[in-house]
View 1: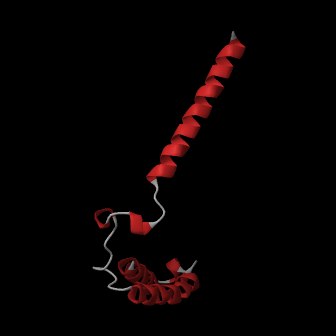
View 2 (view 1 turned 90 degrees about the horizontal axis):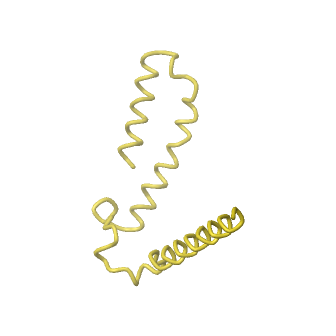
View 3 (view 1 turned 90 degrees about the vertical axis):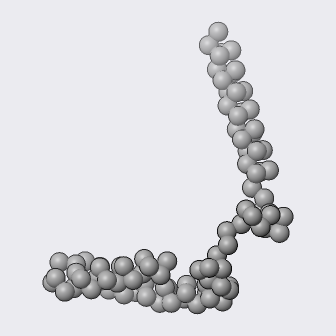
Length: 95
């Protein structure tokens, strides 16, 4: 009896897996040109062009070493803590 129950459970798990996999494959269209515009995010309000996005990303990446330099030094002084919080806020606003 236990063998039959295990086999039925295994078959049920396999069925659910393949059904889910098939549905996910159909639900996730990879070619953006086939997706209607109403279902795409419009990021032009934030970045009017791809070049604007790349510029903002490059500026953000250039500022990341500042974060590494401040690591482990938050308690050195109140001013230093304020500077770190200001940098953190600045980086969060940019993204």
